Length: 372
Ligand code: GLU
Image (cartoon, rainbow, N blue to C red; front, side, top):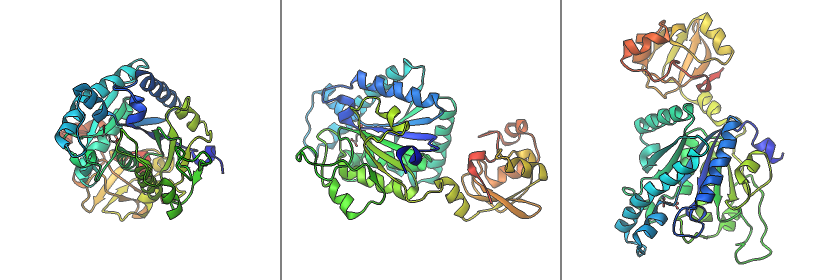
């Protein structure tokens, strides 16, 4: 198989850019580099691909603004730098994307976003809405309150980008870095080092290739990129490490050019469908024949086609969808069982009036339904 085949069906992409790529070794953010990213993101969006960005650079930019050089354990200075740098960083991203008429949104995450279900569901809804409005969500860690990342003891933006990718059901994570990919030896030392184009399994040998390299300005290195690759591999998401200096790198990756290193996922089936299919159902929704026909055409489930709700479930849980008591599909509703009981059989325009709020017109969006 070649790259185009591996990347077939890519609909949602995360692009992670490291500090050294953003600053290009200088004190501030490189407008030229950010503009090139914005231009390439526009290209992807024009092809119907949704894009999310994970950006580093806040601490680096903040430190130069403050003219400070903290020692490695001086956390408060780095926290202050992150707070100063983040606003500059977002201003620059905003300027770059504005030229292409694309709004950007700042999302600062703490590590509990993926373990706290409520926070995760709210985040997911916010991201979905931003994407529907054509915006590009730009993530960074909330470094002012997450000291562990800055201390490089726990998190880093490589790992964060992998977690964002798997939680936001992304097909491909592109990590742009000052290294061109994974080499069998450190390319900065050995002239005969070879780039590894495809990694199918993250074996001990692959981990050994990554060694212990760290970049001077960011907290990541090849080691954290391999951790990111392991997270993506297990969750069914493709990941590519490529050089941020390569011309039109994102466009060329999407076009199927063999650039950098691709880490292939473990499972072939699309992760979300397989996850829904194999998840325990917390309850069930009985639908009428009309809804059954609509579902078979991969259309979303509307309240009007729902006859009965059984069991107690939250939005985001997996439920069975039945017709005449027979299992026809499984899905993840955007409303809990109590709300669905109130709106069943009604037209979507009544939902707000009855519930006092409305997440979506559909009770279950088509992308969250798997036919059984
Ligand atoms: N969140 C950090 C920053 O914006 C970067 C962490 C990393 O380099 O991985 O400066």
